[in-house]
Length: 283
Image 1 (cartoon, rainbow, N blue to C red):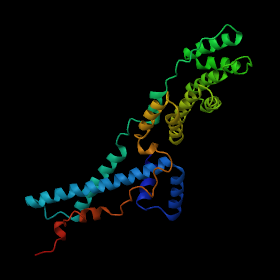
Image 2 (image 1 turned 120 degrees about the vertical axis):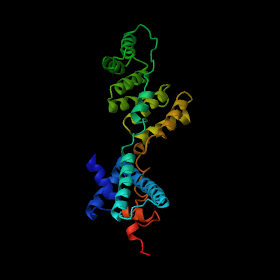
Image 3 (image 1 turned 60 degrees about the vertical axis):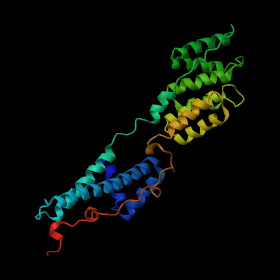
Image 4 (image 1 turned 90 degrees about the vertical axis):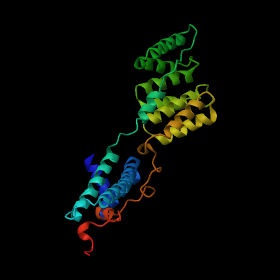
């Protein structure tokens, strides 16, 4: 973490060699999280410098007005004071608690396996389905999977989209994302379970931190499903409140972030409008 922060700081302050800077910029293009962290660092630096100027100016004004300024203080003291303010502000901004809202938290909130029970007849396939459904309802997803797969291989079973939905959700709860998506994607748009499958696909994207795909899948539900549209809209609104590092690639980039200040600590002191006593012209 410290090494990463040091690299970000060196990049923002333009302290990298040309080769290292080119390599870092290539990482920014490929890593949205890193790009967001760079933007956050720039924001913190700008805020820290602004706050530093305000605090130093107020402090110096107070000392001058009260006539308590020590004429023996050197410019080094002022530079140290400004540096301390800047460092403290940067530490606060960088280490401040992240928002409790994360993709994991949203997934946990909305991932509620629904009751998929269905009355069936007395045939062999129906009996097998009843066993699979009982395992599903009990949360025994590993036990339900082979039963559901056997049903899907049975040509006499006529509710295969329903079984696929069960199967996809079972794999989802076991965090086997790829096979879960395969099962859910296989449910055709003509099926009455299509939008339910799209809802779970959106949750899978959310859990995998693919916010862009999650939003696309949720928007489809908002546009097309009366049943799942309202909760999809609610989740879309919640996604807007995610911290910057959860934003999809392209939303935060170095070029769109707050420009890094090139001012030094000495410049912060000079911009307060005051001069150190020992640097003032003698009468």
